[in-house]
Amino acid sequence: MNEILWNQMAVTVPIHFFAYAPFLNHLRWGKKKTFTLVAVLEVLYLLLFRVLLQAGVSLSVIQFIAMPVFGILFFVSVKMEPGKIMFLYLFAVAYLLAVRGCASFLGLVFFEDTTLVFYSWVSGLLSLALYLLTMPFMLWYFKRTAQMVVETDAPQVWNKAWLLPLFNTLIVLLFTYAPDSASDINGTFLLARIFLIICMFLTYYFVLNSIRQLQKQTAAEEHARYLKQLADMQAAQYELLRSRMDETRKARHDLRQHLRALQGYIDQKNLEGLASYVRLYGESIPSEALHDYCHNYAVDSVIGFYAEKAANAGIAMEISFCPLPEPFIPDPELCVLLGNLLENALDACRAAGKEPSAKAPVITVRARKAGGQALAITVDNPSPAPPSVRDGQFLSSKHEGFGTGTASVKSIAQRYEGDARFEWKDGMFLVSVLLKSPRESGKIE
Image (cartoon, rainbow, N blue to C red; front, side):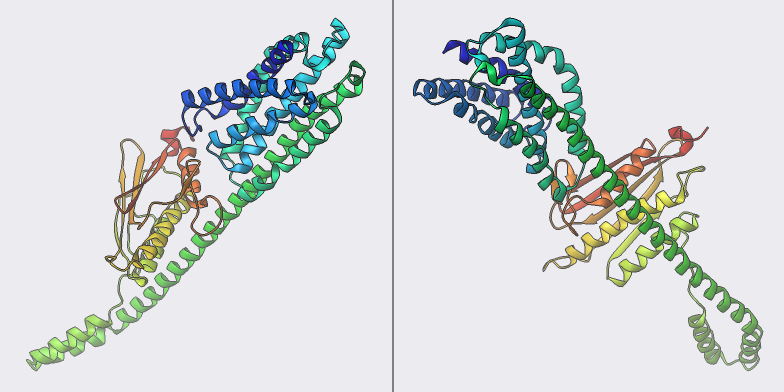
């Protein structure tokens, strides 16, 4: 009895440290409380194991309670999407099965340990030895994989991706789970366990890379959409500028006639007629074609585009934008960043405007130089409720999953060694972005 319990403890305790190691910053109750719960559950599991064994329950049957018992605690302890948790937990299970299978085979071959076969002292010691030998590499790989899973936003994929490693594990369990005699532990048994962990490596590699490629494609499509939108904005602004230039030429051509008319009123000393004529003439002069925010045509086009959309929606926009440092990040990337920020601000203001007691919403846009060749941009707008956050990322209000706009802003800021911060406070959503010029961030010589 004691030999079997020792074996169970030697096999299960190390796997707890392995499973939780990548998620120390994602624990629901903190490190100390979580590890206390794990220790308590381990003791309860061993006690239950002993009671069921004394009651005559088969070892093979008792073994099946370990995975769900420890899995449930892992599931509720880690703050993450359920699909991601299952996907990662199954890797830890596969690792345990591979170690245990190899330890049992080695015990039988080199030590002729046939007393309890799968549950002996020798098998437990060999399991610990294999953990010590393989844990550094496996833990490095598992942490790296877990980080990729955490950073990869694909809810619909993660809800089903865990089924593939689950079926691989179940197939191996059905045929090699708990051999009752030494004859059951043979070359086929060992290969099945080894192939299980190999299949896990391949499965996780291809699933993660496929999701990453899909995300890159989605990001590229989003980038292309904003570039097209930028081109449309610039085309619209250019057309407006061209039409204003035509009107200016016409006005210049007509100026002589106006001057003659004015001179006629002066000669007649008709001040009332002169005042009326000047007023009407002033109203006929076209307004300024483009507002010059920062002396950059592309950026001015983007700001002007969203300023016009805001005005049409009854939303005020206060803009103070300093001239850009020279050299600065490419115009397309800066325009994509501004477009994302202003579009999100407009969407939030439209939602704020629907509130019964809402005041007229105002978007405040500021940009100033921040030492050297850096630029600090802030966009503040009303937001009735704090945005939904999961795993430290904002959820989209337009579709299922994470918002692509904030992720794009962060990506561009980080690309130039800057930073992007988002905060909701007292009914306001506050965005601060720091961008460094290519020279300052080391992007150019």
